[in-house]
Length: 294
Image (cartoon, rainbow, N blue to C red; front, top):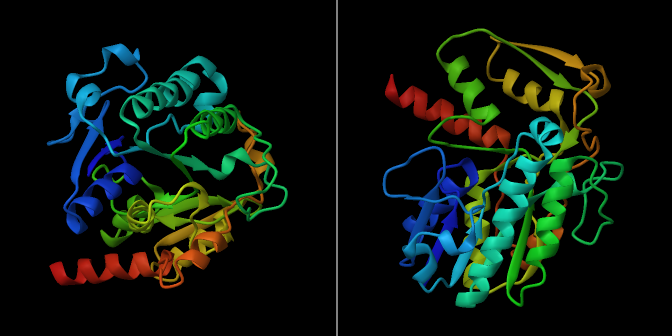
């Protein structure tokens, strides 16, 4: 089986890439755009489809996993053309590639397609994106859903091991492990369902093996506000100082879904033995690894 992971230099794509390589005998190929990573193919999926590299165009892909997008929500709000280019255009092109090779296309989406009034959301909940980012992700979902063979996986607040260490939880815990005092603020009125990127990779492996189709929500056991997220970290690190705020105080460019998050009941019903880890699990793993180095 030939699998292409678009955006394998990022948090989600990187975890999928390394996990599938570790647990399967599939032929796994990954791409990067701006952040170069050894063994990955340089590739901008938003360019004209006919200009794709030969290896991308001509390999008979069984599965294409599209993890790439422009995820800076406030930037997208003020740069609509850029958001459309990196999120919608890339999806249009990868749908074309999927049709050529009759590939399954797995698209990574978000809870930002909902308005945040009634989360955590099930797969069949009414969509109503508030931001340009959310609107472009929903447009992309609709494009993908025209294929005969597709998976749309919605996730939110992803954390985990990452080459660039960009995600909030990994970055802040690494600083705290070094003994650096941190003062961090969080919203009391933004709720979501954080998930470890490695769990996403494990779930995708199961879905590929079982040839699943349609829409799935992936979420862990944690459902909490941004401040509650920080309070979990503080249980392990007294050096963390927490300040709270209301989302409206920030006057951000893009409106956020306040009661967002996702309900993974559908996935867990089909995979009753699957175990989603949580924030505590991840921090304890980091502490154990840190102690082992001492």
